[in-house]
Amino acid sequence: MPVSSPPLGSAIRVLLADDHRLFAESLMRVLSEDERVDVVGIAENGEQAVDLALELQPDVILMDLMMPVMDGLEATRRIRGSGLHSQILLLTGTETPVGPDDATGATAFLRKERSVEELRQVFLQVASLAALLGAPAR
Image (cartoon, rainbow, N blue to C red; front, side, top):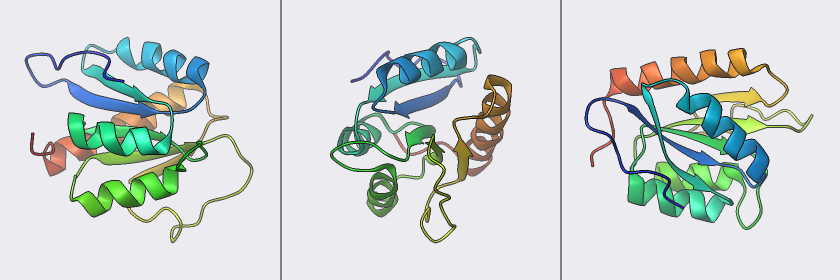
């Protein structure tokens, strides 16, 4: 579901994709504390993530690895296959490591056990990469 309209200026447009609503809403609040960030949508499954990514064309997508309907790996592959150049940060709460071959197309991978500050640092690095590579064509 789209969350807000894009602001004027150069805020980092973010799409969150996580089937755990409490986690997604908490993450939205944490990221929204930074005025440089605009959370433009929240997807509850991988299929929604693909649809919203194509519709909203965010700069960064924070994608849960394990979601219903379509997992984060397949959603990442489909977004990459669409030609959209959003940076994708895969998040997971599982112990199963994801190898580089599995996460093809993802910019970074982060376990959910990290602190809010660590997540914020990785997010800002991914967002900086998005800025360096240029925002997706809107």
